[in-house]
Amino acid sequence: MSSAARQPDRIETAPAFTAADVTALTERLAGQDTAAMLADLLLGELRGRVALVSSFGTESAVLLDLVASIDKSVPLIFINTQKMFGETLAYGDALVEQFGFTDLRVFRPDTHQLAARDAKGMRWGYDPDGCCDLRKVEPLARALAPFDAWISGRKGFQAGRAGLPRFELDAGRLKINPLADWDKARIDAQFAARELPRHPLEAQGYASIGCQPCTSQVQPGEDPRAGRWRHWDKTECGIHNQPVF
Image (cartoon, rainbow, N blue to C red; front, side, top):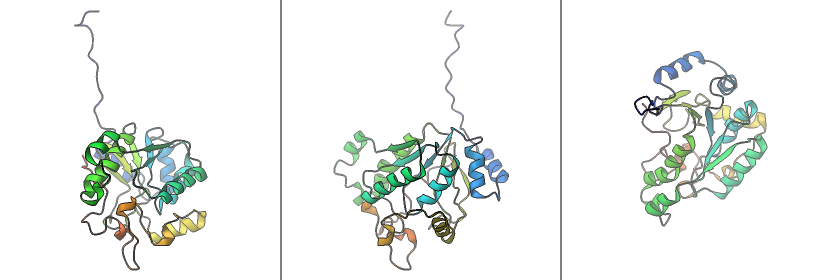
């Protein structure tokens, strides 16, 4: 065959989802129960296209239980920043075992980038944004590359997250926040009703748990996320405030 007749290879660059798709989903599933909404998507149009991302934090068991009750084969992504509490790692292992997830995918920071940008492992102390980018944002980008959509455990009652929608557009990928409209009382009621295990550090005053160096105990009356990046002008690690387009 001549070179003139050969068709060039094509690389698909169109986003998996658009703003119009997000609007349509929001309208179609408005008012639907959380479990029913998840079942509709996980067993329908998003089957094989979506992953669940979990930090194995203090409230993670609720969402893990909801998803596992529908489809235990949904890929479960955990970003091990290599700065995690040992208790978090053990708790995560226990949750995966209890709920029966069959496809756990653990991602870590790139070793070459760590050597170049955080050789002493102390970047969190002088550049927490850069540390989060290196240890969370970049690994999650790699983890999500095969997927058109992902499920987040964010809640609207958490500091800085008021008005959180169920569906968002994140760089052409659909982001789903099933617990967006759940309040703390509902979360606690679900823990009790389903007899879900609590994170072992919660009883010690850790209301929101991330990496060990940047997580502190929360005092009575403080916002649950007050213990994250204390004394820094920072409330998010970076994976939830990426450009939306």
